[in-house]
Image 1 (cartoon, rainbow, N blue to C red):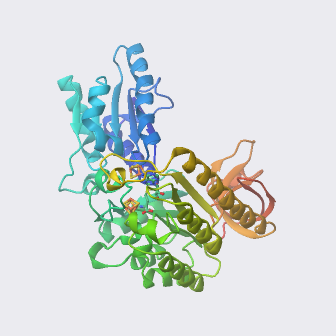
Image 2 (cartoon, protein in one colour):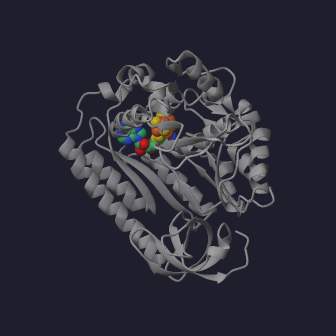
Length: 443
Ligand code: SAH
Ligand code: SF4
Ligand code: F3S
């Protein structure tokens, strides 16, 4: 079918949303929608939203204000859809505050988008679909289309962990593992389209247990697919890091030596109040086992500062944990109170200024660790997937095994390839490399 209409998708939040945005574009292609560059030139706009922190959520409403004007300028000739986690959590509120929105859909119903578009055209009113349907959306999606050499593949969704600060169990629903045959078929199709690196995605990806199998087993199956040279996964929960998965880090050479394993805090009191279901010693134990399996493993984490009741001593425990473990790349956040979560009602909410100061101190320490790790990479040989076009003519940007962006000059002819580079310069947020083998190499 000719793509005669234009779809513009703006994505907020996590990689699951990035995956979902691509799949929404896939389901709309049969209706004639191809990619649009801006909301102004689009016939339909989807905002794929994130509810994780207050700031993320509020962005949606300011973006909707802008879209309202664009829609008016086009005499109404623009379908506006709000998808994702804000839509799930605040669907009614969106329609109340932004009545010019045509479609509101949750993360579990986007396979029904074509119907919703038709319905919106017919009814002239807004369509709201934030159900958690019994049929998993994955059974109704067309084949994923590769967009470059690196691809995301959702294998697991939702969460049953109920950390007391987090909205995900409410916005994404209960834990669901996709069946292995469907995942492996999708991975093979991506490989056929030239994908060399797959990132397996899930809110609790290592809790995947499709067909009674373990996540370590799934990784070994993906590793058998010809053409797939690199495997990553995110996000893992420490509690679901079982021995088989730890062993896979030592045995599966395609599995990259980089693991995002969020710990959130270093104080046992806070970990308990957060309902993280493990203490700091458990985390130290995991790190030790992982490094025994894969000595060059680099670790990454998320942190929350200023969780209700967090004292200076608790925060000092976080700094201490960071010093003991050593992380190469991290995300740190000020605790943000989310409606409907248990932590929102907890006493001793921490002062904004205290949160601010703790965040700055933690980020300094973490940045130090990142810098040291980057400095240690100078002169090393690394395999890089050249998946993005750089700013300068002929320049490409790739990812190192440790997720560092690596700029490489004069390699336009190697776009999309996995190449070996030697790291020649270290910059605060990226590395530079020179190609040493232009032949495509194995991971
Ligand atoms: N499933 C992942 C996290 C998904 S949310 C896990 O268990 O680690 C991504 C990150 O957002 C979290 O790791 C946490 O650090 C942060 N986050 C979640 N809720 C938050 C809140 N209410 N305030 C601040 N940060 C939050
Ligand atoms: Fe949120 Fe905790 Fe589930 Fe992660 S494990 S998605 S932080 S509830
Ligand atoms: Fe945000 Fe939803 Fe992902 S709240 S982080 S988009 S699961």
